Amino acid sequence: MAEIIQRDGTWTFDGDALRLVPGRDKNVGVLRKSLGELTIPLGALAGISFEHGKKSGRLRLRLRDGADPLLHATGGRLADASDPYQLTVDSDRYGVAEYFVDEIRNALLLDEVPATAVDRYLLPGPAVPLSVSAGDGTASFDGERVRLEWNWKTEEAKSAAGARTLALADIQAVEWQPSVGLENGHLRFTVRGAPTKAPPKYDPNSIELWGFKKDPLMALVAAAVQARLPHPSAPPSADTPAQRLAPTGVDHDALLRRLRELGDLRKAGVLTEEEFTLAKQAILRDM
Image (cartoon, rainbow, N blue to C red; front, side, top):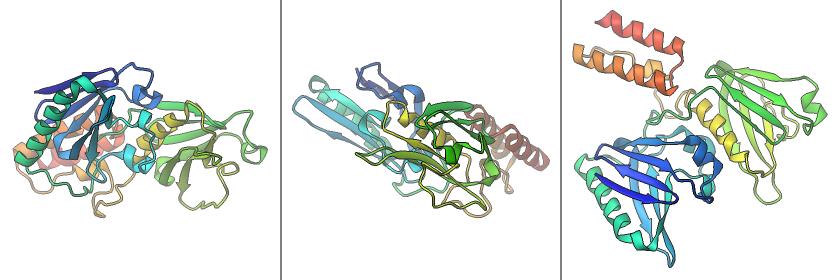
């Protein structure tokens, strides 16, 4: 086992998975603290690097494209303080960091983990239900519906119709964009049958973000929704987590493994109760 403990957080590798625990340092962003402990399976990693600096260095993980709904929803736009996949390392711990890198790289080689993209999410995304208030509104998600509620700072043209509820089945895409310079950010949902070209300030399917402390938390909502949308690279027959785990002529032991996987995904919030029940029934029929 390899472990590195820093003010920024603690990373532990047991040969099969990497456990990331955020630290309590003031430089750790609110998004990382809210995400809490993350477990990254070895198969989700594409690589790791260590960058030296005069006073401190930085460990960086690279995940396989399509493995993490958080990275997909944020499109690589997370600031360093919000990025859970990097760790600041004090100069006196450079030797430990280099050993840590070697251990993970050796494991990737021994397990022959490809660095190629994947067609399903290997991480479950943030747990639900969750609710975040920032910018001109509040976004809540219970695993099946997104609810957008407005505050006193919302433009009247958007708030006049009242709170908005979006069924997950009607959501085609979700995007989180941070505020950069004079440009405001947003959390935007693309809804089936209701396309809009309006800016987030006036779009009833968007929350406008102005660059305040809680803005990154809207990325949690985006990632939780993204984890339950069809994977962009998934084949047509595997649009949902439940469908991906449905049996396809496998043996009895494999069916039992799939049942355990289903239970884990339900506990992690990836599967709704309905998806879990449907997939479980399909497996039991084959048993």
